[in-house]
Image 1 (cartoon, helix red, strand yellow):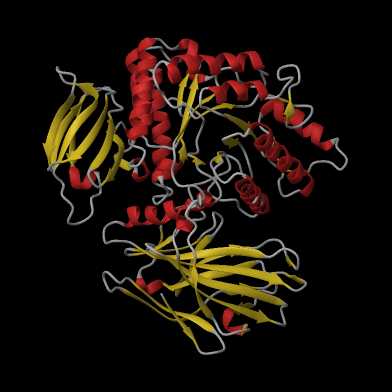
Image 2: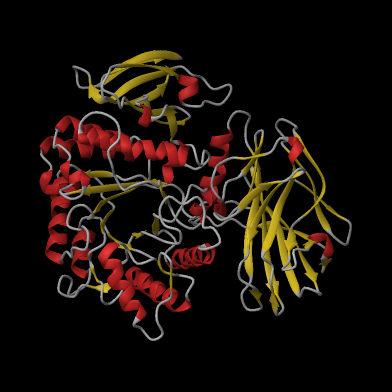
Length: 627
């Protein structure tokens, strides 16, 4: 990336892929452009350079949670001022070792108050063939094998006759004691490897690198509707999983997450005293004793149904009242924000929780962005997430309804919701088979299609549900279907491994299957970040699945969602999206089956072959590079 400095201003002069020598010719482009209240614009060229720009080293931090921070690098930085506007901007361009991208960080500070409703950070000529890669806010722009984005889930991309621009709305004034910071990225990828090259960047910069968190979730089981559960029920679940999965079958269960139903609706995020007289203290002790931990559900906008109505009523009667919007409580309100922050901080302090599930914020389910209505609410949510990561950097933050497939949610939390209903029925077969199809069809429609560069490893997709409540409570307890459900889920490669399971419903075969599949996923944890979609649309009864590749080994899961036998061709280079000059000769072993002598059963080898999938069959493969 080339910058020009004439002593008065700094401009972007070009961007080049050093491997292909592709040059992005953009002239001398301003670093940013402000749109003011009267709709006039002011670019960085109309700011005064306060001092000569400096180049310095970025020191690595070996123990950083964010992977990129473990690398050193170089930064080029300067300060600008516009006295008329009363605004100072600190700007820096960072390039770290082994990075395929340059980040620019902008910090705006007002001397008094400045109203800047819109800030444009990237402006590219439309005639070079740049496009928006995704249907949602926070999607990157792409030109061949290059990518460009504002690193914010509410960034927007618009096209005019001459330009493609990426910008952010700023709906609240800048004030002197509250600076505003954001960043952009300009990156490049190997030819034909846009998804994987973008993923390489995303995994380096996300708040936590991919890591699996296998856990029990009480929803559909002891949590349901407005039902309140208690310590005795929760301890029963912990002890059942401890005895049957952790001790007997040697499975690492990371957490026990207690969903809606632990609180008293009349107190707003205080414990139901009758059910939990000592809070989660006793649950924590038992969970910790078997190498696990506690997680908790909270809803920023107040939850759902009758419980939500009671919480809202309680909030309105406070002095001062807790602020609300059309969807419930508003984190943009300072009173409610502080209450919610205090509650979450106390859970971390008192119970050392490992995972927080935030269910419901801003626009709610099926969102493609915050819009104007919930913009400030989402900004407050992002602020909250940053505060929590400061307190406990390794805390897993499960972001559910109110999110959309922008990779930039991952700079604040660890996953998003796939959108759609929690569960449902789609297609053919038994109810459980229809439930699997529903889950994966929504992933295909709402994520694969709407956010093609969003990492499928960072989804809440609905988990495995074997319990008594809701639609899943009507699913047949058929061992073959349950095995398909379990293996198809772990084949998705998601880090958020949710077990909505009443352990009393499982038989020996179910427990064994759960142990084998979860341990297989754990063994392949270093491969799973690459997981990507294979095949067609589950809703159209097309064969589909998930694949992940790393040098030396790959994994593949396939499912036939129809009631007829289907033939599927596995083109190794295509399925694993192999880079150029990498061998596509692999040996494929069926993970779920063993040979007569107890070893792995080899299915096929070579560059391309066909397999037959029986109705509703799930096949899972380990693929090893042929030597």
